[in-house]
Length: 435
Ligand code: PLP
Image (cartoon, rainbow, N blue to C red; front, side, top):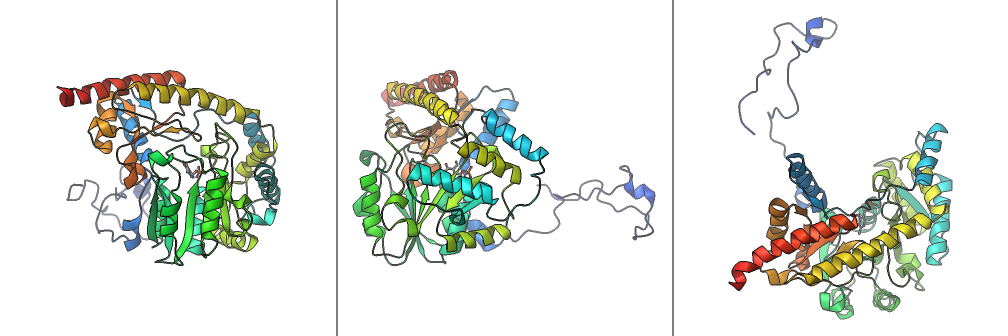
């Protein structure tokens, strides 16, 4: 930002004490233009801010939208949200709720009816007994991750999380002063936990283990034997598990397994889930956590200290979604299944690119290491030069080097166009290598 005072800085000559205010002060012509942004003092941000990371999907989306506004054609395969509208029955229930006066605060952990609906849903879908006192509703399931770290992890405590993995795990763990213990997910192991590596990271300082199945960005899934082995390894420790199951309904093979269903694990597991992905409700900001009641009470206290409660009409919509007909979820998943086949087939046709078939979520994570360009540089040039928005694998951790992430939450036609652009770009990049 340039120095010097912008015009309009000068104070008006009229004295402006309260009770003796010249009406001219309120006219736009005379109003002094001292605005936010007229920097007079450096901001000394708190030290912890330097530890905070980000979710680059939002940044790439903003850049892509700027390019679009400037007239460039962009295929959006960067952001992880269903492109379907929220099912009308859910939207109608929220409109009804607004008319019925659900426009005020609710209890911090959520309306009792909403907590009961979540408890029923979790009992039904996970085959475990969940009570309403074990449920906390939050404005987006990310808050459950933040609150779990705040409630359980002291500075220096160790947190194990997948790498590649959802970037907010590392960002928030670092922000809380935790010692970071990323566990590498390898392509040759189908992007699942390597048990020996996991055991080598575990010790008595391990306080939280973050699992994510189905997985963002790899689309991998932890099967029941994986979860049993993880549970077994944890039995001698004091570690809690944060089981991020936000994609549990977006699964293409088999059934979803939660580590909470393994004997002894419900006590030390926090399940993170929400409405965003399964019901195309990302903008409604409603997620939830399921955990033991003492911990749920602490999370409610954190809610009192932050957002007070999740929006009341969103909670009513959540009841309609969880307890109502589920056909729309199935229809959406079937469409994702068709798109998954298209994107994976198209990626595998491109020379220098290989892609595994993801088992869940709506992301393809192709290996592009043979193209010979750093993934971030590759993603940048795909966006700037070819109008294809995607994320570099390194946006999900060091182990994402050599990969790109495409969200296939976009129409089949757009996916095909995106893959055409990818093919042209890669042909261009490979030319000098092969010449
Ligand atoms: N967990 C994972 C793995 C995600 O990919 C996301 C969103 O992209 C979230 C949690 C957060 O979802 P929300 O805050 O919308 O509930």
